[in-house]
Structure formats: C-alpha cells, structure tokens
Length: 203
Image (cartoon, rainbow, N blue to C red):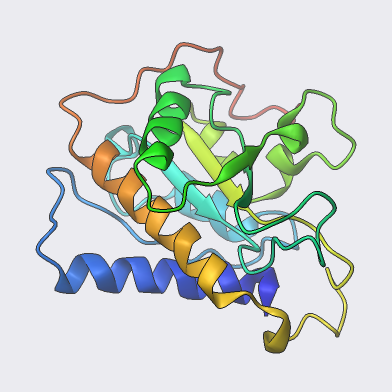
C-alpha cells in the first residue's frame, strides 16, 4: 500500500487535478509511472534512455515513493509535518530553494528531514529510486518520501496504516512545486557536477 501504492495514486491525483483544474503551467507536464524499480530501476532507465519527448526538454523530475506514512508511530522522529527529501540540491541549488519556498506557502508546511540525503548514507536512497536515472543525465530531481518503516517490503504494508490526510498534503506540495517550476522563464540552474550517465551512482 505504501510501497508504492501511495506514490502511484498520489501522482494520479496530481495529474487529475491539473487535467480538471484552471491551473495550467506554461511548461508541459509529463506523468510517468515506472515499472521494474525493485529489479534495478529498469523502467525509469528505459524511459530516460528512450524518452517520449526530447530529453533536453525535461527541466526537472519530481519523484514520490512511499508517501503514505510519516507519523511518529511508524517513523522515528516522525509527525504530522514530517517529510524526507533526497537529492533536491544535488544538481540544482535553485530547485532545492524552490521546494523550500513553496513549502512555506502551504497551509501546513512540512518539516523536511534531509538526513537520508547525506553523502555516504548507508541506505543510498539517492541511488535506489527512479529519480536517479534522470539525475544521471543532469536533470535536477527531488525525491519525496515519508520514509522507511517496519512494514517496508513486508506483507503488513496494508492500506489501513496509510495516513491519507498526510499523503494528500504531500500531493498538494508536489503539485504546487510543479506549478512553480512549470511557470519559470528558465530551466532550474544546474550548478553542481553532473554524474557520468554510464557510471555507477555514488551518494
């Protein structure tokens, strides 16, 4: 349910909100559901290697995986405002700043936990989810997650444990970030070294 029903349905809700709403960013939005993440990021690698639009036209990628928990019951240090961010400034300081700025405008801003984004972190989250296949081509990314918990990869990852109100707020934040990025008159500035597209990911 959380891994990754939560990210999948939240992306669908965001897509539906843009489709039926009056808010239309200047840039086009692409909604992609990648398969084969657990098998080695296979779906995202295929898409980024064979994109349906020019790869150079993709200015940022916003990735959600496991956004359905976040409470102190499930995550150490969690709570109503808890959200982990990974990679938001690894390629673009500007994109990371946009995320922080948009968050301040939300009705109930999140408190971001950047600890899993630390260089050398043993979980290597930056390298383990679909955003990395975009980052390896120099496309700035942000990975949103409410974090790993005791039901991760267990049969107990069930819908009754999802915090739907919290998940909806994550969706609203990602929606609003997409609006801000989509209305920029420029690409988010890449001011950090780009990875080698053919190399191994290093966090």
